[in-house]
Figure (cartoon, rainbow, N blue to C red):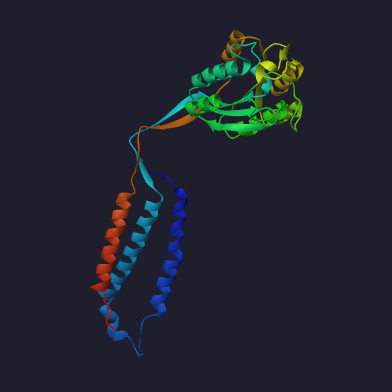
Length: 325
């Protein structure tokens, strides 16, 4: 049996004042008369009613104890298997700036990245995976979880332009570092995917890399797409405006070098798939996992025991221990 809320066992401390007041009342609450000697009464012993009174007090304490245990939500498990698995903590930091709509990947950089990232997440059976998005600012879309379906759904709901203009690589890396530190695995990694250069946010990317290094986090950087000039009218329907898109490879390489990760360049869909296949070989640490086949609440027997004890207490109080005014 396990308790869902074991900290509620602290309620047993209520026994201390209850017992104190009970003893105090025994010493001062009973009527008495003064006699010259009690020698004739020594052979009589303690009356049975006194023992019954103590027994009834113990019944009340037991009833309170059963109620406290019931509040702790005892649970039973059909079976428990502890297994040692290989796992790691990973946060995917994905660029959602407007330039990710460039169609040099099929159908574009953003959709190609989402698809490959989702396939990557689906393969990571025992890892804690989180999701951070960044553009002009950064935002955590999914904290670390082993629920791969939730992460994949979060990836599918990412939207371009939802975090303002610009590419805040440093802010995105800091947010991802904060998220990955919440995991229990020894190995902690960040996969940062972008198609531009840092031009927004408050934290310099190399400063963010130093923070990740101090926390023992490896950063794998991916530069997606080709250095090119795109036509903004393809994205917004405005007048044709040629905008150069250049990936800051030097910064991305330096981030990877500082943190002990690797830099990858993905200029097409096949290359992006190969990059994630390579990252899929990330180092892993051994984690002990407890697997329960079935969990059931088991507090009703404690409630039933408390009710029976309270009934017994009342019966004794109004029968054998009844006091006549």
